[in-house]
Image 1 (cartoon, rainbow, N blue to C red):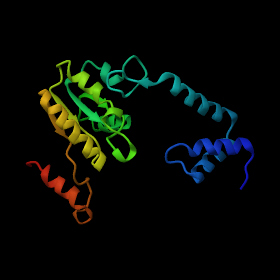
Image 2: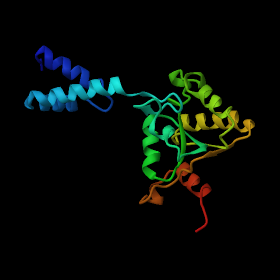
Image 3: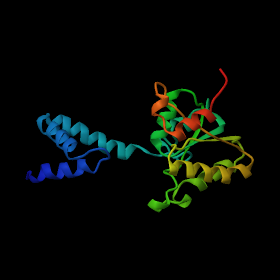
Image 4: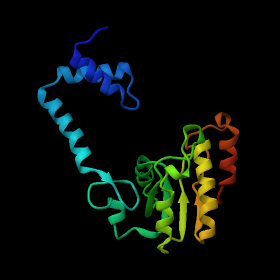
Length: 198
């Protein structure tokens, strides 16, 4: 189907967004077309505002509105523990648990030779600079339980252990409500390794 040029341009831009395919792009475009002009203006302003107001925190590389992010600015946080995550969205996931009160370090990805990403493309040097300040006693590696996440975790562990900090890895295993019969061998094995006393 051929669309008028403005609609085609909007569809092209929407389809560039992660998780938005042709059908979703079409639904969003039709919603915008049917809405008041104010809706489109608010959406456009919100998009521009986020690009102008948000930047990477120079300490942990999470998103920040001020000079540093809210976590790094919080004097109540435990500066002796750093949780290393792959992406900024992972900070939000850990924060939702309410269980972690330390600081974060966002790598900006994982080691993936297939994609041409090595440690040099990640924020590993910046992590080492933070550890050199001597306040950190534990680094929790919270990369995803994928091949690339595990590779990155092992690389970081070998790099950080000689520096005299405790290096730990988040446990992985069965989700709440999961069924043992459907768990793969690696997940079930990890769940057994990470068992704890009741």
